[in-house]
Length: 504
View (cartoon, rainbow, N blue to C red):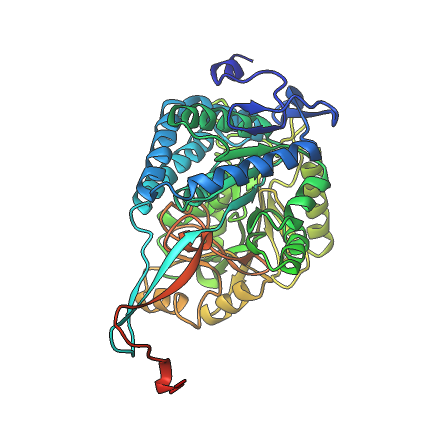
């Protein structure tokens, strides 16, 4: 509880808030937040009700009507101040992420740093919401395009990145002039409440209300209502492909906008020219980081036949040095899975791999403890097996031998997902092939770094069943705005385009 008090959290905060306006509605009951390292309850929060939802949307709508007129660089100053508060609280927030989600303390701190980096990017972007000026074919006419705010942006985030993915969306959405409503994972409500408190304090100092809002619930009616609500023009959803597909159907039915960051089945190719001093650490972190609970987790490894045994032995040796335990102990590199159900999915995947002919080289067992710990696992497999083509949110890496790079790329792309991919090579031609139109079909393709750990600045997102849209960098800001084309006639005559004559 000392950690919660350090972040100014109460033991039973409400599940709904717009700036300094926490709901007192307790009719929907409580959600418990569990510590996955020991299965114990950390704290409880009250679920948001549909009454809370309606109040929140109305407040966010009201706030947008005035906030959209605030100059974008001034909006950036708000995000700068939030970034400064995140810097001050980085250690506490990183520890809370580790406590509630289970990722290592290093990764928890890294997630908060990702928010800080995102704030910095958003501040700069607030002065670069550029449109274009085009030459008109008509005499004494000028054409331009400009970008204008959308309104409310709904953000539905997942447990594995309980704060960073919100920042990817919220900070950019706000500098674009929008208000945001956040529906976080009910598995990590305390992280969301901590961030909301920071936003409340900063917005209060700036004199803003209703810019950042929070709705916590584990009931489907809140998500369904958000997806159906025409007052929310854009919803960013991070989660499974199955849920994302259903949400997208609803949003598309009302001609709304969606950003979908869904599942992945990411692969690394290690060719015969690879520098293994780079490859082995990258593979290990990619497969084991966050206990395999990242959308960018490395799940398939293709190794050239000439170095297959060498790479396998090096990987087994690396896995033997992975320390597993309490994520707040910085000696440990891997923490627990999020809950009991995640452990059951791990066990099922191991059993399915064995039944399909998989050879377990390392791990494969549940660690007996109060928490939800499993062993990081290496399995020799075939790329065509159903289990290999399935995303399992656990530290399981399937190892597959190949003969030619074309074969490896074909196997990598033989996946219904298309998020992240990597090739380790020191052969220029191989690297360029991998990055060409004949190469990786993923939204992210790397050379000599792993699939996991994307940095702020590049556009993040994938193809195929991974969803669509981009977040966190490049021109991703345009998704949070509407484009408007303007034509100005500054002459004294009326001229039609395409030389059309219409005289009356």
